[in-house]
Length: 231
Length: 231
DNA sequence: GTGAAACTGCATCTATCGTACACTGTGTCG
DNA sequence: CGACACAGTGTACGATAGATGCAGTTTCAC
Image 1 (cartoon, rainbow over the protein chains, first blue to last red):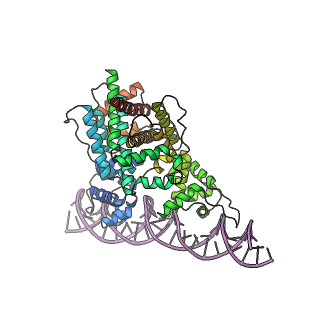
Image 2 (image 1 turned 90 degrees about the horizontal axis):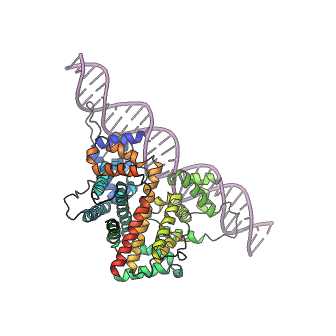
Image 3 (image 1 turned 45 degrees about the vertical axis):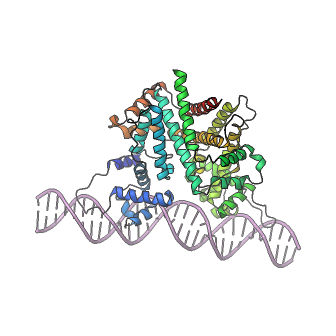
C-alpha cells in the first residue's frame, strides 16, 4: 500500500531537497550502520535507538531519511545481499553456473545471517534480490525447460541455500545442534533409532558440513535426470 | 542454559501441586488459544496480553503455567506441528515414503504458517519435531546411504518443504508475488529478460503452484541417481 | 541583501511489549 | 482449625516504534 510506495521510493534514493540545512546523514551510512549492528549482534539488536546512537544522532532523526523501521531493514537487506555474480562468463553450461550461483548466495547469507530472517514473509523485494533471481533463471535458458519449470528450479535452489545456511548458522552459534538433540533424546533412545544411528555414523566419518554441497548435487542431479529423460 | 532446562520441563508437563487453589487454566488450553491466535492473525499478534484475555485472565496469570513467552511459543509450535505420519506401512520403499513425508509436512506448515517463523534460529527443539526427523531418516534405511548422507537428504527435503510453503504462503497472502515483482520491474524490463520470459510462459501454462511437487521430484530424482550410480 | 519558505534534528509523548514483584484471596494438609 | 502453599491481580519498569510540535539553519526569490 502506502508502505510499498514508500519503499519503492527508497530504492530510487530520495530526491535531494533544494532548500534547508544540509542533511548530516546519508542513507547508505544509516543502512551501513544497521548492517554492522545486525552482523555483530543479530537483527534483534537493530533498533532505531541503537542505529541512531551509532551515528551520533537521536532516533527521530532517522525518520527524516527512512519512513520506518521496516524500510530501513529492507534497505539493509538489499545492500547486504548485494549484486549477483555474472554467470554468463562461466564455461560449462547450466550446471556449473547454478552451482556457482548457489555457492555465492550461500556466501552472502553466511556473511550476513540475519538476511535469512529479513527475506521472509510479508516484505518488499529489493532490486538486488530480483537480480539474483534473474541470474538463476537466465542460467537455465535454452536447455529445454518451460518457463514455469525454470522458476521452480530457481525456487528449489534458493530454498536449499537458505535452509542449509540457516541450519549451519544455528549449528555454529549454538555449540552444536547435537547438544540440544541429545538433551531431548536422552533416556528415550529407543524412540529415535534411525536418527541416532545416522548421527553416530555421521560423527564417525566427520561428514558434517557437507550437507550443503550434497543436497545441491542431488538437486542438480535431479534437474539433469529430467533433461536426460526428455532427450 | 536455564531457559533450556525450563523448556525441557515444559514437555514433561509441570508437576501438579497438591495444595493451594485449583488452577483455572490448563497448559494445553493456553497453547491452544495461542495457536488459534497465531493461525488467525499471525505470530506477531500472539502476546501474553491477548492470550490471557482470550482465556479471561490477566497476562501475569500465564506465568504460573509458562516460564515466559519463548516457552509458550515453543509449546505452541510443537503442538501445531504434531506427530509425524507413520511411514513404515507405506509400500514402495524410500521414495513414496519420503514423498508422503514431505507432503504431510507441507500440509502442517500450510495449516500453521507461523510455525515456519518459530522453527528458525536459536530455539528449543520439540519432541514432535524430533519425531518428524526420525521418521524421515528411518525412511532412508537400508538403501546404501551413509548416516551423514541420510541426515543430509533429510535436511534438504525439510528445507525444500519449508521454503516452498513459505513462498506459497507469501504468494496467497500478498495478492501475488508477481504484483510486487512487476512494480519493481516496470520500466526496467530490459534488466530482467529471463525472469520476465519465464513468468510469462509460466502464466500461459498455468503451471504455478506446482513448484513444490516439481522441486520435490527433482530432489528425489537426485537421490535416486546417486543410488543408481553406486549400484 | 533580505525575508520567507523549506528543511533538519531534537524533546516530548503515547501505546505496547515482556516480565519482576508484592499482595490478596483460596484451598488443602497436618 | 490454623498454617502453609499456591492462584491470580495490580502495579511498576525498561524497551520498543512511532506521532507531533518546536527550535534552529539554509537557500531561493525577490
